[in-house]
Image (cartoon, rainbow, N blue to C red; front, top):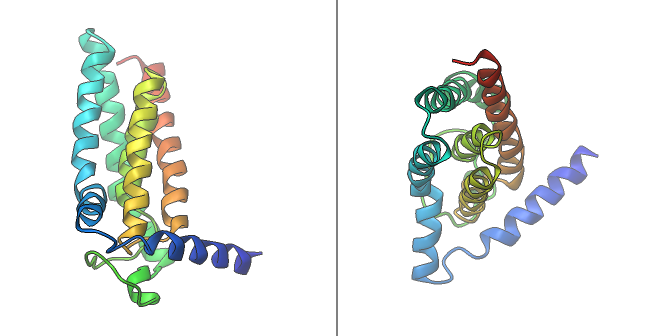
Amino acid sequence: MISQFLIADHQLFFFLNQFLYQSHIGNWIIDFFARHAIFFAGYLFLVSVYAITKEYRKRISILTAGLIAVTLTHLGILPIVHNLTARVRPFLALAVPHLFEVNSYSFPSGHTAFVCVLAGVLYPYKKSYAYICMLIGICIGIARIIAGVHYPSDIIAWAVLGWIIGYVFARGVQKIKL
């Protein structure tokens, strides 16, 4: 079962990675999403919070949930999982073309987790904003696969877990009523 999963994971990786170096514009778009769109997603989150409500306390609640969820994910959960799994990046393990190098383990995808945590935080407040944020997270994840720095399972697992973590913290902050 696990071997079949890994085969499917590698097959999807190879399929997506073949689009690297097809055109200069394509590579620019891939590079933008793989490395820089995370900043756009953070900005979108902040703008979304201000668009969701005019109420100061509610804005602080949403921002607090986002800050706690992202901090816990990136300073607590992700480093532990990185070291426990120690999954080598695809461009090193499979000797495939890559757009840039990263000097850490592949699993989990911190970029995808970050954006999907923010999407999960937005979901209880404004689903359409959460969907837009999640779509950006998916684009980031696909770009990072094409760039050769992540396997599809790195992206899928942490898109789901990131969203759940964000959602749980948003709901928790709603119950506390800061």
